[in-house]
Amino acid sequence: MTAEQVPYYPFPSPAALEPPQEWAELRDGCPIAPIRLASGDQALLLTRYDDVKQVLSDPRFTRQLDAPGAARVTANESGGVFGSGGSSSMSGEEHRAWRQLVGKAFTAKRVMAMQPRIEAMAVELVERMAAEGAPADLVGAVGFPLPVRAICDLLGVPGSDREKFAYWSDTMLSMTRFGQEEIDAAQAEFDGYLVALVAAKRAEPGDDLISELLAMVAGLDGRLTEQLMLGTAKGLLVAGHETTANMIGKMVAMLLADRTRWEALLADRTLVRPAVEEALRFDANPGFGMPRYLSEEVEVAGERLPGGTTVICSMASANRDERQFEGAGELRLDRSPNPHVAFGAGPHSCIGQALARTELQTVLKVLLDRLPALELAVPAGELWRREGLIVGGLERVPVRW
Image (cartoon, rainbow, N blue to C red; front, top):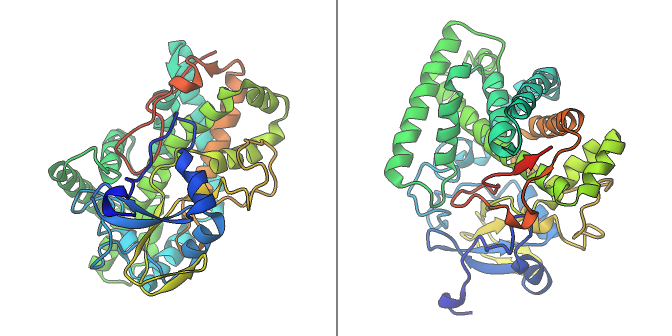
């Protein structure tokens, strides 16, 4: 394959809820495929379940994409979610220490304790949407406000500052949507805000994640504490806001695209939990995937990949691998077991996944309870993807009831 023939990635899709045809072709014929990124740099794309899981589970391979020779994901020099700074560019040892620390504070118990508040937020948003009348945009009315409220609640951010968080998050996830100057300005603003928030929590601790982390790292020097807090807050903002916000819209669209799925959930609420897992697995529009920088030579699928290679793990393609999932191209509400890799795998798997699952299950239950007649207000084929960001999503999900 000549340099001119290397395809640009991400691949375009035939429709908002359908996967690019390249995934199946590459899984069958070329599971390690050369691709060109938005930056113009080349990388290798992994599309099979076993290969993706192997690379994601190997602690030697990090998201250290500022290493010399690593492919740049975006055309921007810095400031993105895969750029330098935050938890993504920590060394293996630093990252393990960070995970351990945040894991101690960000427990399943804490998330379970948040569930009633998340439910109250979901009820308020769904009722407001219902009161304003149909048709409504589910993404704008519920999908985006709910995770922002939940993550601000978790971090102890005042409600009046939620709107800023949404904008800062978008700039961190830009592939082509924002220019470097705008990203730099937004990130400087975000960092300044977080430094002030951390100082306020240090002076007057509350019942929130930042206060708890500050208590845990009281013995560490101030600069490290600040870096740790910035990395944590940024990581949770992206993992806990943008991805879940987009997933709410996609999940509901998937379930309403064939309304027999919605009817099945109305008839049997025990399907809510497995339906959420299946929507995560079946998601054809998750965005970019997970980049990894190979610090040393590794064998994948019988091929030797040299150190210094950048690989992109397509979790969404892996989740549709027939070698792992029977009837992978079908959405089965009761699929079990369902060992999908939507949240990654291994040492870098999504630390916010318990919160994401709680939000998705809660919002689905609230919609089923409050708006059982919910349906798409446009054909599924007319839904539009969000473009230019590292995460996938739908611009709008018009609904009526």
